Amino acid sequence: MLLGDVLELRHGPLRDALAVAAEPLGVLGRALGAEGEAVILAGNHDHALIDGWSARRGLGPLRRLEAQQAVDWAADEPLGELARMLSPARVAAAYPGLWLRDDVYATHGHYLDLHLTVPTLERLATGVMRRVAALDGAGPQGAQDYELVLAPLYAWVHALAQHVDPARGALMHGGSVRGWRALAGDGRRGLRARASAWALPLAVAGLNALGLGPLRPQLSGGELRRAGLRAMGEVVTRLGVGGGWVIFGHTHRAGPLDLDDGGEWLAGASGPGAVTRLVNCGCWVSEPAFLSPDPRTSPYRPGFCVLVDEQGPPQLVNLLDGFEARAPA
Image 1 (cartoon, one colour):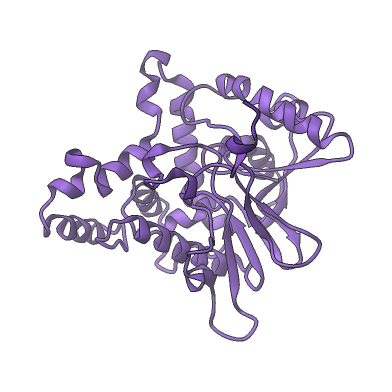
Image 2: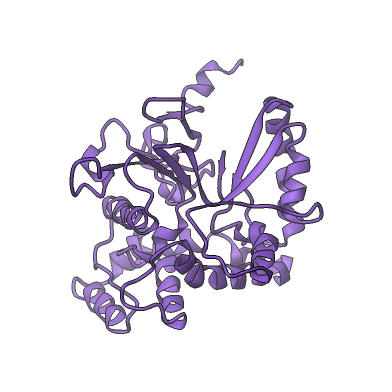
């Protein structure tokens, strides 16, 4: 399963992203072979993959979007291109998630942006869109409500990327990363390093007063992790997918790892049988801004995946650990 953000559609035109994807997806498809299957989920960076399917749903009878929906595509749509790249493997698509087993649900995880308490750029943008969409105070009650807020935001960013001047394309790159550097601090240039002790709480209080919260004036890698897990726990409850394991990505922070507090990775622990165990599959994009001083042990290092067998807990592994040592000279 490719758990969303298979393509980067925020940095430039779709044709460029498809050109970059052809070789690695071709390798994956040949490795799977005709007996294998690749399942594609859309994330926030490639939400446009489901545009055609969403439009066809809008032409039919009114139906609420459930936690698992099969996605179809036409041959000339982006998903059709990906299916050809993954040949000879069989290809399926789902959104916003898929039950891998009766007790294992997988989704990209971008819905958690509505519940983050860290004032990231994505979180502030979703706060604005929630006001525009006039979502009531109870918040999203299912996948349809999440899409009401997020889909227009993603469509705007995607449309902008399709028309951006290639010479100015760098303006579209790494917005979330640059925003986090500004918030958390990047040497002497970081906002955290330059702001006084009262400035951040004051700014967050102002954002909360504008109805963009609730936000907390806490900025650290640990708080980013905890806030993401709290937010994902909220999504689990609102989608009604709790009780077993939920695999997600989006935050790029793999876990739980050996040194993590296992209690942070539990959601909905309100009674017997109600506990959901969260597993984050990390990210295959190497982003130095998030790596710890020793990249070999960083939870943000690329190469993580989750193995799901017919029974037993999902296993988080890193396929690149030790790769350099094994590689021939």
